[in-house]
Every structure is written in structure tokens, then in C-alpha cells.
Amino acid sequence: MKVSQMYAPTLREVPAEAEIPSHQLLLRAGFIRKSTNGMYTYLPLAWRVIKKIENIIREEMDNKGAQEIMMPIMQPAEIWQESGRWGVYGAEMVRVKDRHGHEYCLGPTHEELVTSMVRMDVKSYRQLPLNLYQIQDKFRDERRPRFGLMRSRDFIMKDAYSFDRDIEGLDKSYQDMYDAYTNVFTRCGLTFRPVEADSGAIGGNGSHEFMVLADTGEAEIAYCTSCDYAADIEKAELNVVEAPEEAEQALEMVETPNCKTIADVCAFLNAPVDKSMKAVAFSSEKGLILCFVRGDHEVNEIKVANTVGVNEVEMADESLLVEAGTVGGYMGPVGLDPEKVTIVIDQSVMKMHNICCGANKEGYHYVNANPGRDFKPTFVADIRLAQVGDPCPHCGAKMEKARGIEAGQVFKLFTKYSKAMNATFLDENGKEQPMYMGCYGIGVGRTMAACVEQSFDKDGIIWPVSIAPYEVLVVPVNAKDKESWDKAFEIYEALKKAGVEAVIDDRNERPGVKFKDADLIGYPLRVVVGPKTIKEGNLEVKARKTGEVSMLPMDSDYIATIVDMLKQL
Ligand code: ATP
Ligand code: MG
Image 1: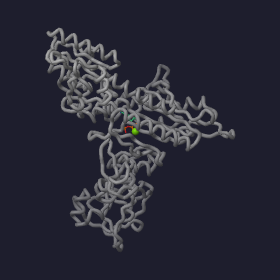
Image 2 (image 1 turned 30 degrees about the vertical axis):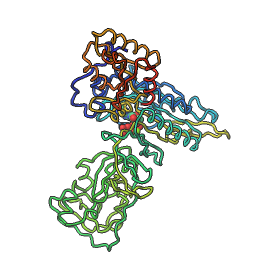
Image 3 (image 1 turned 180 degrees about the vertical axis):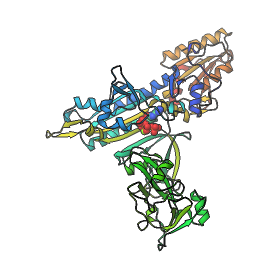
Image 4 (image 1 turned 60 degrees about the vertical axis):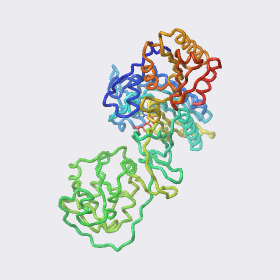
């Protein structure tokens, strides 16, 4: 490829909406262009990276016996109604009608479609296990598309679906995918960590996310400083926090004017914050949910939704609170009507004594409220968010937090879809059984962006060789010097012949301009050919990653040396 012909329009200024390095650099270096909100065109350089990531994925999937297919993007509403998700998949799902008025969605994921196919074709245990995957555009009308390819509305996903006879089979398929993902992200040169993830209504320890570690990541991870426990903050389990025993005092309502926050109340009543209770109100498809945690703890929405058995919770409006007989800023569990509101109390609150909490009356709090005696929960559960310093649920050592980019997720579905959609097979005894399923996704564009997020400097992107758009850039520096100019072309041709993905910067530009673009785009190796180096009998080779410059004698087998250097990077 000649740079003079390459469609890689670099930018001097990036739009202000590009907030993180990967988004800025991919725009600046001419890899992607925005078409509209949350939608991007992959230009030739990006597309080469994408294809390399896809090929790594294909190799690792095929290696585990998964088979590639391609399903339609548009899916009929009926199968989503069968699984029960047409109603619960909210505004994120793009729905369209055809000319006959039939409803469809643009696939945000493909469990329904693959299950509706496999149930027709697979009838016997002999046809299992089966793992089918595709690499395809997905559509999700994200509430907040941002960060370029990280959270877009149209994005490329590798999605795989496994079908097994039983749980043991599912466990093996899951482990295979876990291992395949580990290989994929390692080969893409990423620093990542598989973490336990929330598996929603399905429950159990049936999911891991592959988190690429980066400060700009949208996800938070809690990890143990001693053992290898690590979990998405949404999932991180917490043990009960004990409180010292003490005698129960009489419940008393006290006036607390203008004390709307925990800090205000505790200061006003001179009460320790760990003897107070914080309330958070959510609305859900099951109505109002009032959650209570210790004053210095935070509520984890995902745990609340899982505890109550709802798909999603949202912050509740004041009007809902008033209907339930309470008021914002003064919510408490004492005296609430369990018919009108679901009361979810954190497990650690149940160990507390003589608690200070809202009195459901503007300007008033209770002191000395005691669980059991003064209030009864609908649910007691672990509903709090892990904090730095919380004990690890496995070994008790302190936990830390880090940020990550979720590049992939593996998930045990068990029989959720096969039961809802009647995907069964006949076992050895001729008995009908539901298939055990798993689903496995990798965001291909997000993986590319995550790679940039982990590997750049002030001058531009630093691609690992495995997914770099090209491997070597040859830079002739002086168009007026025919000898070195021709030599550069000769080297470029020789590199291509040796199987190296080479580019030559044949533009009549100053060397400084060429070097700047080379660094911005991030070619792993740059070979400079100019009158001076040629006269000295050398080629100058610079590694983008280390900045190391090597002089290769012209009378040596420098092509072999360059090939070797690429392998070492
Ligand atoms: P997130 O929590 O970040 O919204 P998700 O858990 O909804 O992601 P999955 O359904 O697990 O995503 O999809 C599999 C993979 O697809 C994710 O691990 C991620 O890499 C990628 N992905 C999901 N949503 C997007 C998006 N809006 N833009 C780009 N990639 C995405
Ligand atoms: Mg996910």
C-alpha cells in the first residue's frame, strides 16, 4: 500500500465529544468516521485491525469445535414473544415493521433466533454438544452512546451459543469458551482480567466478564489483594457486617429540621453514622421498592433487582413515595404498609441495634429503631455495593477497586431459553429433555478501542503486531535523491515478497510530516531510507513501542532481520 493512495484522512483537531484517548486517536489517525450518533464507519486501517481481531477469534473458536454461521440481523417479533423478552427488552431494542405490518427487531443479540433454529434440527442426544457462532453487526439503541466504538448503537459482536445435554456438558462448553476468550485477549496484546459477573435472574456463579484494565473503563471491578477473587462491582458478594451487642432502647420520634442527608442527621443528633440507616427508593414493574442500608454503605441496584425479581429498577418519583406514605429525605421502614411497598433491608442492617432512620414524616427521624421489633422487611439480602477495604468473600483480606472495559462475557443460560421455547432432545432412554445452553459474546470494535486505550503515547497509537493494520512502514525521506528513493521502493517490494504487511510513504512531504503520521497511526516498525543512511551503508529501523533505533547494514539480510524483529515485538 502506498500512503499517497491510502484512505486514512488524519485530523488535526478532534471533536470535543471525543472524551477518551481511544476515541480521539481513532478519529485523528483516520481509522473511523462518525456517521451519526453512536454509529461509525470503519475506514481501511480500522477494518484491517477488525479483520485481524476477527481472525484471532475465529481461530480460537474453531479450535474449540465451534462452527461459524451467519444469521439474519432482522428477527421476527414472535420468537421474542415466545421467550418472553419482547415485552421486557426496553427502548434499547430497535423495532421495525415490514410492508405487511409484521413486527421485527434489529438483533441486539441472537438467543431467540438460534434457539428457534436448533430446536427444529436437533432431536437426539447424538447431535449434541453443539456450539454455533457468528460475527455480525448488533443494534442497541443505547441510552448514552459514547466513547466512539466503546459504546455505540451499531457494533460488531462475535456471539456464540452452546447446546448441551446436561449441566456437565454445559460446564465443559463454558470452560472451553472461557479458555478461548483468554487466548483471544492474550493474542490481542491486552492486559485483562476475567471477573465474576452478575447473571441476573438466572443466578448462580454462571457468568464471567473479561475486563480490559483501563482507568477510562465504564465498569468497576472489586478484587482481593490476597486471593484471586475478582468480580464486577455489580456482582461482588459481601458478607454480613456484625455490630456490637447492646440492649434495645425505646423507639422515639425526634424532630430533625432540615436534615435531609445522613450526614446532616448524624451531625444534628450527634449519632455515629454506622448506627444510622440510609434509604433509597426505586420504582419497578412490581411497584415501589424501598431499600435500606447502613448509613455509610451504598445500595447496589443490580442486587436489589435480583432480590425482588424484577428486570430493572429506576429512581422513584416523589409522587410514588407520597402514595406509599413516606417522603423523600425522611424515609424509614418503621410503620410502612408492606401491601403498598416492597421493603428490602440489607443483611448487615439486621445485625444493628438502636438505629437512627427516617420517620416518613417531613422533619422527623426515629432513634432506637430495632429490626424485628420495630420493622419487618419483605426481603433481607446482600444489597450493598462493595467498597474499598471490604473483606473478600473468599478469604477475608481487604478488597480494592479498579476500572475496566468489558470486552467479552461468557454466560450459562441453563434451560432458560430451551424451556421457554421448547428446545428439547431425546436422551439415551428416549426421554425428552431440555437443552442446556450458554451464550458468549465479544465486542470486536470495543476490543479494538480497548487496545488503543491501553497502548498509546502522546504521539499516537502503539499497535501490537498481532492486530496492527500494517506491520512495517518504509519512509523514503528525500524525493530528490533518486538512489535512496528507489532503494526504499526496492525494500518495500522485498518486504511484501517476504510476507510482511508493508506500506511505503511515497508522498512528497517533509520527513517530519511523515514521521508524525507514522507515530499517530502506530505502525510497529518504521524503516527510514535516505541519502545519508544509504551512504553509510545502513537502514534505520525504529520500533514504535520501545522507540529503539537499530541500524541494519545494507549488505546483510536485513529483510530477514526485520521479519525477526516483528516476531520479537
Ligand atoms: P455493557 O454492560 O457494556 O452495556 P453488555 O453486558 O450489555 O455490555 P453483552 O450483552 O454482554 O453486553 O454483549 C457482549 C459484548 O458486546 C460486550 O462484552 C461488549 O464487548 C460488546 N458490547 C455490548 N454493548 C456494546 C456497545 N453498545 N458498543 C460496543 N460494544 C458493545
Ligand atoms: Mg455483558
